[in-house]
Length: 158
Ligand code: PNS
View (cartoon, rainbow, N blue to C red):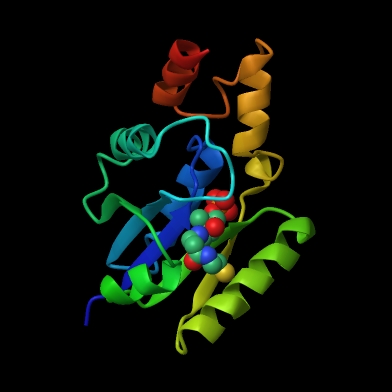
């Protein structure tokens, strides 16, 4: 049976840290679906179409990876995709509390929902989409932290 993983997130925008998690989680799944949240409590800088398009360009060389947007509950989407597990990245202990709560809530909402946590690579442990947006808005250089397509998109938006 094919093992399908779902890597959900806001990806506003995708960073090198996200791409590292994507690449490393490919050893665990036959197919990985990157699920870009359409409705999020956060006000996003990029539209969902822009976030999906940037990710599609970044993963174009990985045949096992697809990028889609989703709305509604994550567990419903995961069930519809027939996926075995949700993949989340963990950077620091501070991420853990929130991620742990979400994983347990998802399991409560859908019995059998499993979440796999991937530890960040050290060099990305301080990286976040919010920091990227703030630095870019203040004129800083983010080119070593995000893919080129994101650098261009940030420049265009700003
Ligand atoms: O990149 P983020 O902001 O950490 O991603 C959070 C995301 C999109 C994975 C989370 O907000 C989510 O799952 N949203 C979908 C709605 C849902 O299922 N909410 C209940 C979560 S317990």
